[in-house]
Image 1 (spheres, rainbow, N blue to C red):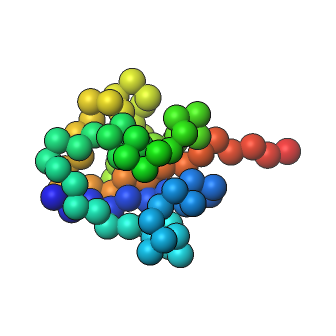
Image 2: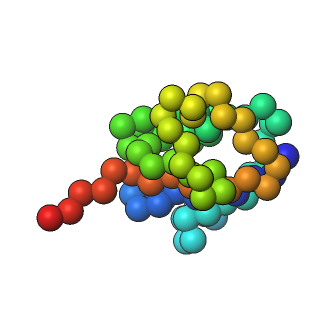
Length: 84
C-alpha cells in the first residue's frame, strides 16, 4: 500500500535523498506497517520522535507500536522543539 511520510526539522536528514527537498516521500509499505516500523526502518532516534500525526491526528507514544497505517495515510513526525 502507498503512504506519505513526512519528517520535519532535523529529522528530514533521515529521509532518502529524493525526499529531503520537501521533507516528504511516498512509500510503498506492507499492509501491517506500524508507526514504530517506519521509525525503525528509517533509523530515527526514538528520543527525537516527539510529535507524531497521522492525517493530522495526534498518535500518543503508547499507540505507536500498534497503530497500523492504512492506504493513503499521511504520517508526519517532528522532533522536540526548544525555544527561548
